[in-house]
Length: 325
Image (cartoon, rainbow, N blue to C red; front, side, top):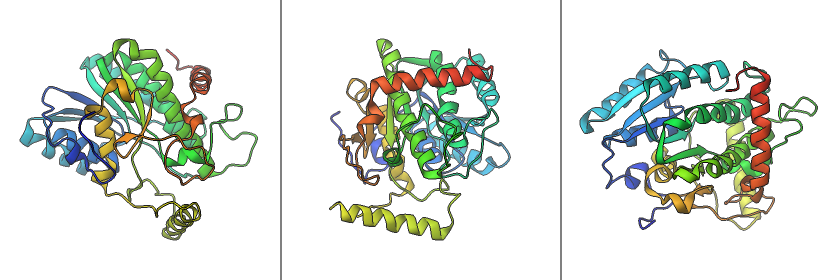
């Protein structure tokens, strides 16, 4: 990893010297936010991108913009309809991509929901765990044969993983009060653990998986929060960091928030980052202080034994609804 970037680097900075002609990527959630910017930055360097959207009509403006970004550099963009909250939709999207047969240099599992009120997916899973973790788990595993040798899987986690470890006994909040932030934190811990377990299974052919903290930015991810709630969250984070002697939090713009994803997918050394948690275009330090708003990764999010238990549990949950391979 000879090229050094940091928290202020943008996706365009990271890819400034790269020609991605002939490379192909899958990105989930490209209709807005970090996913859309990640796709744009890759397309602008000549890559081909398959990007998932939940609805073609509502994503029409994004699709047009991404195709416009691809044209000057000779890249191409193909939308893929996918609802991560439905395993039938995941299967249909994966089957269509498998039938197409095009290989991927990297899969970037970017889509997600945050702090949502209690609800269940089509298959009966708690909504955040089902969408953020189970949907991506099923999708990436089905598409693994399309990853080139030496390819990469980038799973977007979050600083919020520090809020809560996974709960394998009650992942759906069936016997405990629902807390949207605890649910979100558990799903983001699950994202990191999935990367650990996937990396272990596929590094024999050079395929490496990582989890990424993109950085806090103003996207439509906090759509379930009112402006007052969002302001209160910013104030709480600032106070918690100040009380711990940490510098104040800084919001990234969208380009900066997409930087670590493209760094992980293209620039960083596979053998160095495999199975790790990344932030600010670098490997994050392990920090087990209980402060949920500290930097770095808590060790439980990289625990290989916990990752295996989660893998087994997730396979069983998918099998229980009749959609296992």
